[in-house]
Image (cartoon, rainbow, N blue to C red; front, side, top):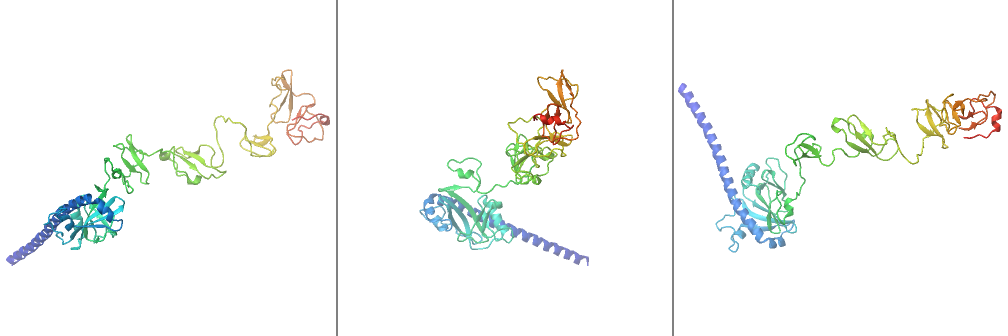
Length: 439
């Protein structure tokens, strides 16, 4: 029994060994086929480059953006051409036939695919392996058994380039394709050149958007000046003086429609400035700066107000706000007008006229050459400047039962009474009506 178990174990080991060796053989054979194909491909690639450069004018006369010029292995082997030996086979180890198709997308620019047609349809993995052996120009037209590719498109090694194949006559899935660019008969690389090439400025120009996948944060430390990244929202950053910085000003930001559209103001956005296009009160744009805690208006704010902590100097001021004498108001010192142009100010929470007389107190020193009359702080009593002090003169407090109407700022010269409007207070004696009122 023990001997039988040993035989069974030995048989199983042998079977596993055969399978492992078999897999190795398949893998090895695939590598040999790929290397042979790539070697053959390199020869025809070089021949195609020389042929197109030599015959660029003739090819440009034939090729269009949708109809390719055809170049065969036989044309490259012709005695007058001699770019390939006559012993060179036109098929590769996968029985695919080599050929070159050349399009002219724009005048003077040729786009050639050194490609195969027919034979074995290569799986994506095998085609990619062969293309990798070709280097930068190598590529393939996917069978797409991997499900990773778009149809009617040739892909370069490691996705280094992509070319639509709809205008190429014999481009079918599962074939090889190497991409060659020519400008005015000169071979060009599909890659961006690091250095300038005399007479070839297009080699330093991108033909597709450059996508920066490196995401950095503004203000973070960086090592290489001139390095470029983005902040995750597509805002371009560059390494400047050891930190990532936004291009242009980092503090002037895009405008927003209204005040509610301003983003959060915090330490990260401190000192950024934005324009609010439509304010809540009034019209016209309003500028705001983030002070780290909130958005502060640089001039007129969301509600139409402006705060000036210093002195405002101007020519004429048009006061458009109106108020009514005796109405409540806040804060004290606010200025308005009564609708006909008389200035009013907020005094102790009540709208009142701004007196043209100085506010004085009884016994206070005065100069009669400057002012002969003064008014009490309640705007109801007039004082005269007599003997260097403000005094309440005789008759200043008449007692009558009737109070004649008066206009703002009128003065009864005989009794030194002042009109805060609309009536005299204290009452003026009847003799006041005989005098001329002055405002």
